Image 1 (cartoon, rainbow, N blue to C red):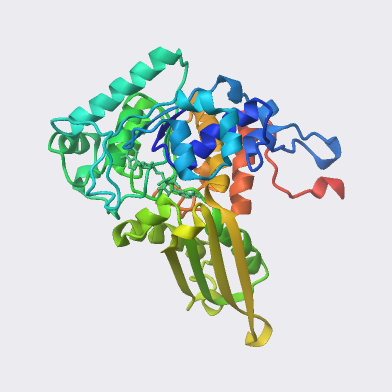
Image 2 (cartoon, rainbow, N blue to C red; image 1 turned 45 degrees about the vertical axis):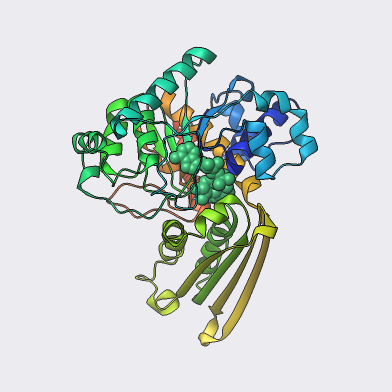
Length: 422
Ligand SMILES: NC(=O)c1ccc[n+]([C@@H]2O[C@H](COP(=O)([O-])OP(=O)(O)OC[C@H]3O[C@@H](n4cnc5c(N)ncnc54)[C@H](O)[C@@H]3O)[C@@H](O)[C@H]2O)c1
């Protein structure tokens, strides 16, 4: 597993897997490790564990590597992130210390609040991409890896829109030669991964692999891709609650969401340009779930506000507040308040693990390009241009499990269930 950025999310994932495979902790929150899947009719009673149903990699076979702009090893980085208890990190300290970040492709113009010394130099962005490809090959040879997956867990970059340079593989490669400004660091990593035929996931809201050039490259190199922006704290809750309100046709006039968090991610998001990338990603879910064009009376004039406030004393323990102004029968108003005291990286780590496991499976199953069945994990799920993204967590889960059934030649489950009564 190659991780870009060895910050809070990555180190929590890596240390977590190390602790879990030694039997020191439990993989709570991970579908690949704890989930089951119903097969056939309800009367058959078949519900194997997902990792016994599909051929997933074993946790014991995973080796970790990554890039960061800071030189500290993974143990030191995990201590800096401050997510896991020092005593827990001590148990896997030697293994963590052995993971030293490779020098990063980084340009401060895309992440204004960061700067660090462990950065590659190159004559242009093409040269930097080739250096990353050399890193990937060297890592593979050193560790004797059969397969690899890359996931961007780096900081959120400034907001960007698609431009002409993103249109084709050719225009993108010319852009790399010319160090085009429309190619941020994350795209250089995605390009390197896809060129090597690696599956690629984007855990952040950046544009990264969500451009035509990358989709063409993924098709050509048969690489599966997934993203964007992991669905953890507040958006996870939003996509659990909103489908329920919609199912009961309760109207929503306002949804005010605010967060306080104090980790490095929060510091980066304190920059308005990085926040804009996050804001766009966080705001889209409700529009798609509520379908205001179909239900104008219920959701047509929804005011949706999202705020993130950097508040250092909280560290990685984010607090999210949601105030939802509802309307019920005959237009009577009601309110719902949600206060989620969550741990950002504790919610993110199982998503990183599952994404990597499923992308590796997809690659072996010959599935390339956007893996929409992994929307379950993402706030801004990648999707084909002709369809809208599916945000409803329960539809996403059904889609994911049906994909696994399909891969293994099992009947898809429609929940029709007439056969029990006919
Ligand atoms: N619940 C969550 O934690 C969550 C949910 C959704 C998305 N995300 C996103 O995941 C990403 C990682 O979150 P985090 O909490 O680990 O952040 P973090 O700040 O702790 O870690 C990010 C790391 O990336 C490194 N980095 C930045 N640019 C880089 C580059 N070009 N090359 C190599 N390394 C680079 C930084 O030095 C830092 O160590 C962020 O973009 C965040 O928005 C996190």
